[in-house]
Length: 531
Image (cartoon, rainbow, N blue to C red):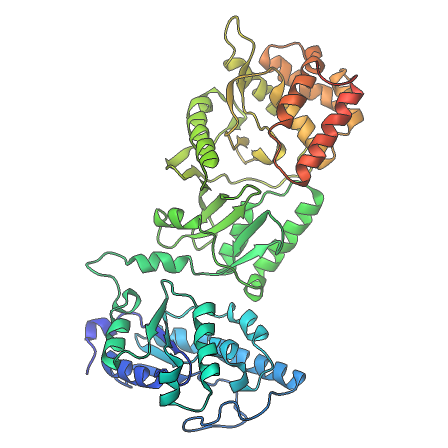
């Protein structure tokens, strides 16, 4: 059967067929090749199309796949490395060239077979193959054939029932069904199996000019690298392309010398494509609703916070250029904060004066809030609050002052990590704690105390002296007070109230412990607990 010339001109598809012995991989591959245009159009590969030389060349079916014992540790490692290099060359060079030429590729077994059935390849276990599997690009479609062990054993009795059943369970566990993974019952007639594969959206392609939902979901099957590999707070950065890996690191804004050095090291590794060598992870579930409304070629970097269900997602193009920043929440508390942040941003943005600004809200939903991206500049000594910024924060407070009432506009979480330096000035982000009736000096005290508690500067001595009107901290307080129309000498009087109020909103974890300790020390330094 000849393939339609119009379809032949399109980009080809790669289909990998896997499953235990007796599942019918070869039969399905042959039938698919016939339907897709025959050998002149379809490249048929068994495991690998060797680029590197083979030690031996086997022809015909393997009748005793587990007959020979595993290799020794060194030999097994060498074989794994050799197969990995050979198959990487196939998937990175040969397959892309073939697909670009409009031809299809059908592969039997593939790399994951080494992880499911290592004894067939005389390897000592599945661990190395499993770890390396994440470094391979995903095929267009992976077809997994499994079925009752008794039926598969009747077809090919080379392996015992227990081993066939184990392999079937391993395939279902390691390769769960998804947009690019199709599970089929090997006991179905071959005609039904062929129709199921050809009818899959990945193989069938877009319908009526509308991009298939699978194309969207496939973006979420790309692999991310998790930094750091352990911990409750983490960042998921694209491993490829290299530009997206570099750009994705901007979802994290380093505040400390240690963080800056780690960020610089990660950037250097990303620049040379080193993330491709690290273990991969799936994208967080929070990416899905954002991907649905993002440009087709966009990619994402994800910051996972301490609170479950709260994430920040940087949306980028394939060149690593930021398009937008999205915040998501899956619990009622998080949704409430997103709603407040959306309304606060609209309400308070116009009250900001130069050099301060706030990113615009691009779209909003119950579980999601999308902002324009901020092109921030990394800075040293992030704990320092510039006097011109402190004065602008004071003016912001004053814009909300009403006759007869104490209080004004406050951001509520004016900390170094929410104040981003840009080429045009300073961007103030994260408005979830903004208030129209915040206490006097709250924002400037919050920046000083949070910097002291979590960044180590200003020191407690510098902070206390600043409240008394001496040193660099005093200049910051004076600039704020001048903008707010307040007496800078009143700052120390408002400190106890700030310490009590802010302590209730500290996030759980080590930062809360440090924040509580710093506040307790400050209370003692100024003469005991708040009234």
